[in-house]
Image 1 (cartoon, rainbow over the protein chains, first blue to last red):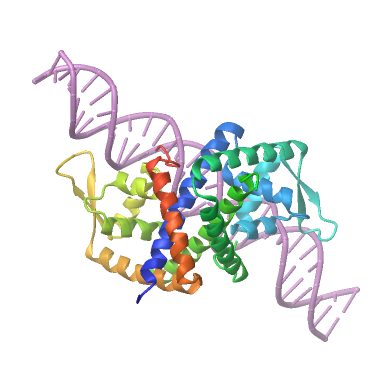
Image 2 (image 1 turned 60 degrees about the vertical axis):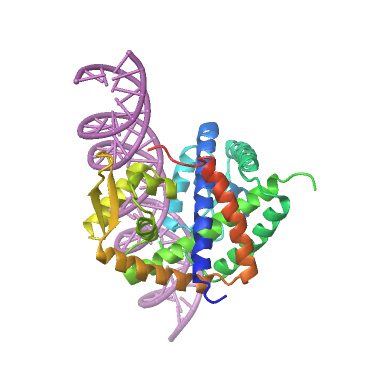
Length: 152
Length: 152
DNA sequence: GCCCAGTAGATGCCATGGCATGTACTTTAC
DNA sequence: GTAAAGTACATGCCATGGCATCTACTGGGC
């Protein structure tokens, strides 16, 4: 087999289409059940699971710009799900923590996502595991290379 | 093994992160080399490969709203890469075709994407093929179920 | 033929994200 | 210590996409 360029574009196409549709579907379900969208769920979940989480940490994790995340945190704070605590180690930044309502929301939203994904991902356990393994590996390589991270 | 919910969320997370970073990386490269972004490349490529392509066909293919695509086509038309031809079979819609500059652009952009992907996707041929197979299958299921398609 | 429900897509308003800039703070060099 | 360079993030402007709405056209009934 000669060229792999075709295979690469085909892979990207399937990857992007799957991601878009799953993301949209979860977005819709989260909005109707909890009044939030996926990007908010992702942020809340990251804040919950990351110790000493700052704005820049979120931005790095989701490969978004710092400015966008800062505005997103403003909105989550306004809704009463997140708090910015002064960071004793660095007064330029804040530490992000969930409020009690935020904790509850993320737990419920997580359950909603798991449920909806179980409906949509009708793959065998082997397919799921093998694909996750490959994507994890790819992801680590991209993250290590700082590939595709916006500037702002 | 009891629950698979965890596996599903993990899969989604890897899927989304890979997609975001690859998409961003290609976006950057396309912008600097050709002055377009990924969504434009996708549209141009679809117009090129879809016979009798209409706005709604593009929207369905990329799981975006019709309104957004209509505006995107406006921009591609303004740049001189796409033309809206009257659709003899239905006067409500137009048929989208590439102009000669559009054809050239998409060919060059395609090469740029293949090249960049070859740099970034350091997976074995087997991993790539197996993962593409699973994602293709998932994609077909999602498309068949009309999952994650915006309304507008 | 004529209506009426349905469809294609153009357009407006709004929310979100990118990037550039501004500001406060920290680190480094001297 | 102090000045200069660097960092964290808040903010503003702009481009894009979602959704609602509007218009034009089509495809049935009758």
